[in-house]
Each structure stands twice: as structure tokens, then as C-alpha cells.
Length: 79
Image (cartoon, rainbow, N blue to C red; front, side):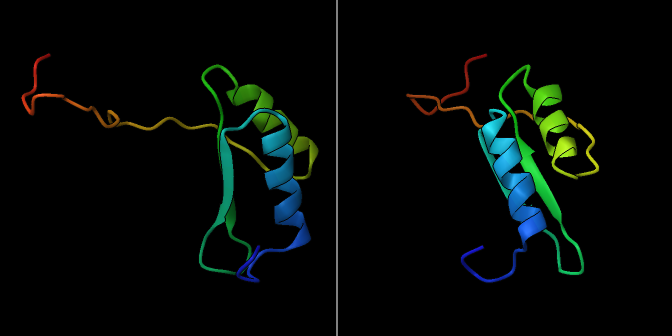
């Protein structure tokens, strides 16, 4: 929004996602419509998607297929 590349429809979707408990939400894409990506808390996927749909979005839920970052204090991996 601050860069001037958003629009009221996208801001409405971001606000709806955040109000429904999303940990974050932002626009993405290369113009001509773009998309909004929202990160719901665990178990909040349906709630965030429903809020975005109610705000006029066409939503689908997906999952990341890779493990996240791990911090190992001594520099070794000890599973």
C-alpha cells in the first residue's frame, strides 16, 4: 500500500484476514490483479479463508511442503 501498488479491494482482503486472526497478510503478484497471501495461525485456516471470501475474495487453502528453520545451539544437527 505504501508503495502505491495496492487498491481498496486488496486492502479489504488484507484487513479481513488480519481481523480473522491471520499472523500476516500481503499482496503479491506482478500487476493486473495480483493475489493476497495470508498466514493463518495453526487451525485458523478455514476462519481466515472464510473472512477473506466474505470480503470478496476467491480463496483456497494450501500447505507448505518444506520444514521450517531450526536453530541448533552448538552448530550440530541432533535429531
